Amino acid sequence: MVATFTALVRGGGRWHDGSGTITYSFPTKVPGYFPKVDYDGVAGDDAVRILEFNANVVDEIVPFGADIGLNVAQQAAAVRAVTTWNEFANINAVRIGVGGGSGPGTQVTGDGTLASVSGGTPLARGDDGPNPQVDITSVFANGLNFFGTTYKELFVNMNGSVSFGAAVSTYTPTTITAGGTPLIAPFWADVDTRLDTTDPITGPGPQAVYTLDTTNKIFTVTWPGVDYFNVNATTHIPLANKFQLQLYDRGGGNATTGNDFDIVFRYEQIQWTAGDASGGKNGLGGTTAHAGWTSGKGDFEEVPASGIESAMLNLPTTPGNTGERGLYVYQVRAGEVVTSDIIFGAWAAYSTDGTDEDGIAGLPPSTVAGAPVLSTYPGADIQNKLLGQNAQSPAGATIGTPSPHGDLFFNNNYGQGITNPGFQDYGQFTFLHEYGHALGLSHPNGKDADPEYDQQLTVMSYNRHPTQSDKAGIDLKAAIYPITPMLFDIMAVWGLYGANVTTRTEDNTYFGPAVDGTTRVYP
Image 1 (spheres, rainbow, N blue to C red):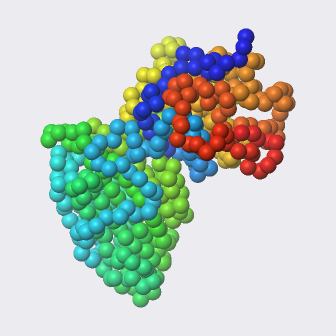
Image 2 (cartoon, rainbow, N blue to C red):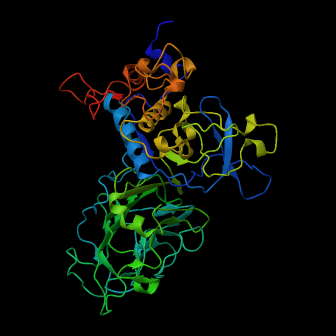
Image 3 (spheres, rainbow, N blue to C red):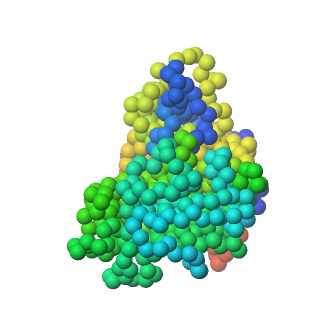
């Protein structure tokens, strides 16, 4: 048999014909659209099942609500993988909010830097208020559809949020959960703007301001350097937090159902996390700020840094669910917060046979140590419980809608290669490999270790570089790995999406030599 790139697209699918867009994101919780199973016969604690990509074997079961967030190093590896594949084919993978069926508003761009807005209505200086009710129909003609309820007004709350139905003046934050008033909070903490404490805070002045941009269809609330309670204390040390909430109109609704929209959090500068009345001293300690959203009906999500002082302080420099520093985007479609076409997640998996696969593409994750595994599942009809499609065949996915077809999950129990992937190691290779599955590529001829192929030809092969043929005897830390997709990978995705002729037009070399100049990695 002659090795050929067509072996990578056996039965494969593609997201689009080269003219479309794929969105990707980094959620923190198991997406709610995955099919649920009752794993133990107890009502109310449904779970998802994980299906190992190669053998279609169920590894374990995990309840919903589990954390699947990637750490900073993993997010960086995922972004590198996306960027690398984009380089040579018209895959057009973009972070959530930039593409994938967005509506009439302008696209979400930038990072945590505050978006420039003109004019607006400042909130009068105060503590825990004022919290004015604002008519938003000049931007959202049909109102907003937030979990089945249409809202044409919202309250702008001094303490770092907007809410629906009632103002929220509570100054000490709690975990943002399913109960209470519908709330969208980029930074829920005790804001105090009673004094113009511009020294040593540089402009703009610390007054919250909201803006209705009727041209671009964006509602914005900016906290442009706000201080914490108590600004009147003689020992108060002024500090400034600069953060922003934006709601982008995405159309899709009518007078009855309300519009689709995007929720955008931007964090430019965070210097304090708690007010004096929340147990803080000089802006720190006490009850730390929280961020996220809740429907008030059982649906919610928090920014991973919530309640963790050091993490909240680092929001401006930490990648959000977009992969961009300080930027979070949540898409609300038909009333539900959805994820993007391809999501990246991680968990700590413990399989029934003791083997922990490194990356699993295409299906829901398992997450916590000690989660129930297959041996505890009551019932023999296992096949009917599986989720069917995997990332090798994503043709059934609909662009702009959530789908399990392209989701990737990485096993944090596999070791440092996955939990702390570097630029030139096994972890980065795994991100390249699993993302290739999500794009529609298979193992060569459907075999992970087909002897006709190795990693010098394709990242989709399990066989090492030909100089390292003894796979079992190679230390992962000493092995060499591709730092880019290889020749057959390039040809295969050209066939699926077409060649990207806009990059590296000055020569015919896609990538240069290994960054550290060694022979351990190769382009």
